[in-house]
Length: 384
Image (cartoon, rainbow, N blue to C red):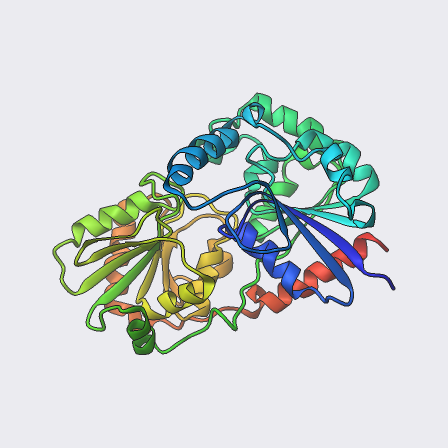
């Protein structure tokens, strides 16, 4: 049997959950059975096999002007995009005729021409993994986070998607359920394949050794958080984190660390801001931390939550749709009422005193090996 050729298309390479998932699939698929190509809108990675539509760089000018303005505005308004991945572009690829399946991940951001999907799905099999359910859902409460998601834009997407033959994949059962309940998917089907965690990277390490390796104090309780874009009102709930940081700013026995900031800064003795770090280093930080504080406001699957649990670090988060699939209250972490700052504060205080009572581990269904087998089976089934 000849190899199956998969073309992955994604918004960004290197820095997002979707990017990491796509890279994992490409690296772990059986090379004797699959050939994998990747195209992204914006590239923050260093993979030689990834083609980027818009080149990125690490200069101050790019980070503070071009990326924030151009990418940000494209994300909000498709019509402002300087170019698209369209049929002409795809058909110009040297390997286009060999492609059997197109695997779409995050196609928001203006770099991909959605209107080609009905025609494209007549000649190629298409899978869309939904890392963000709002892409193919109606105007629910999460629409408040995406200003361009008006009823008019929803109807436009609905017209495109209902005329397209797409196999949808939700990264959590909650996400898949939302997809199935929306008319936008038409007669298409949806299934769940959880994002898989590489437990050879994200695994429990000796806390003292991890702290020594990272240069972290051994006599403090370390609270880890994800900064996201660095905006205090972002969807990672950084505003809630900062409220707690403010309340504990005089505590000498606690160190708060946020990861994923645009710049690095030791703000005070008990609050450090770090930039983007590798998966290997992230696993060290999870192992070194006492708590992963993640008051997310909108996620389809908590990839970082699964990574934290795999490293034995308990999680404190808000109760949103996918959380009960990953977490058990008072077993591997604590679940606060959604957007309830007082409840979050209560469980934060509780977890500091009761950390040792928790049994933290990751279920096998969230492991990378399980995910790879399910995607391989899906790829093969589409061409039977």
